[in-house]
Length: 328
Image (cartoon, rainbow, N blue to C red; front, side, top):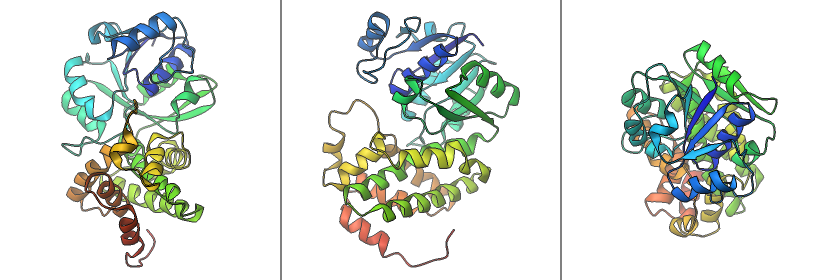
């Protein structure tokens, strides 16, 4: 694999373009915004989404989807989760070209995981999922990072890992796409809850409890979809959950902290160029959870605060008043 197409020039897409170039690949990145495309090509920087990282001059940006994917040996999909369907419908990837889902989320209108959306829109594509504990700026700077790269095609997963892997970016292959997707999507919702705990200064014990009980919600949801429970103990599960739930570098955690400090949702996201995927994933996961018969009280609480006008204090009180139960 010599030519890698990256679809999406946000922070994570830009970081993955840097990874692929560092691994020696020819890289072309699709940028929706003409100004972003021009800045990457002219100044070798993404001033909006990753302003403090210099990019390899060999990375080429375009706003033409067909040009981005023409001749690509693999396509990394790094659009916001809610735009994956429309982007894939426009893209029409060739049969046999690996399509790597790097977006983390659940489709709001349908409750489908990203790999399910891709299977529906591009049934001929060979799918993989790349997920794990990754802050884009650290990845782009070449700081040590490990990720899960899941595909039911083990040979393709190994080829992708070889094409993207470097001493500081280590893909670990797996076969459980669903588990990798579930961990990466729902951890964003749990991170918002952890941020609320931080904003309300409820303490480290409370945050640890939210992480642990959040992992239990993720595990129940994953089990209902027949995911491998071992996946949730790996990079795309516990690893990603731990990172996102403990740092203000996380957009989702920062959103929760603002809400916990008294900001409205509208004020908390005002002026932000990057998307906190957990805000949309929260109601989406509840749609799918209801169909599966899975109880997810933390996700429900986050969704109620974000979208139903529920007060932070009242919602916390309701969570703490839930009946005691066996752990699990």
